[in-house]
Length: 129
Ligand SMILES: [Zn+2]
Image 1 (cartoon, rainbow, N blue to C red):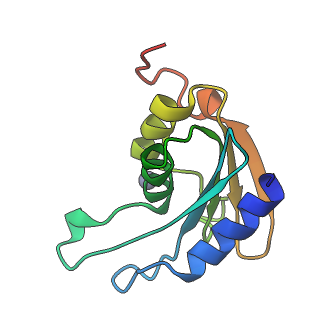
Image 2: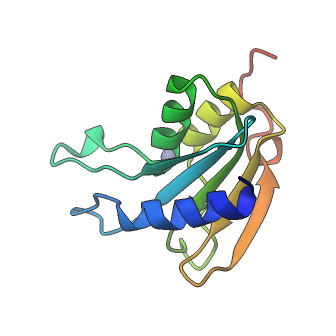
């Protein structure tokens, strides 16, 4: 599988988002070093602090499967007119598991996308090296 497959998986995962409170439907998918694709969906809770971003669901599932991420795709509505890249917490988890070279892709509902290296999105995040 490749980045295109991961993008399709992220869009499909967006459709499975559990977002009854925010209505901000987000999906994600990780492309792993073995070529697998691991999806994740936003999961909210009536106790709002328990919500988990789609990206971290996908990243944690990747680690649980014994895989390493090489790319992280986020499918989401735009935020203030701009493509929505992962939040700081998700970037930190991505840095831990995938390092500064992890490719991060944001795609909106129209299919417009952009990408960046994690190290450029979180240039000074703590990292074990
Ligand atoms: Zn996040």
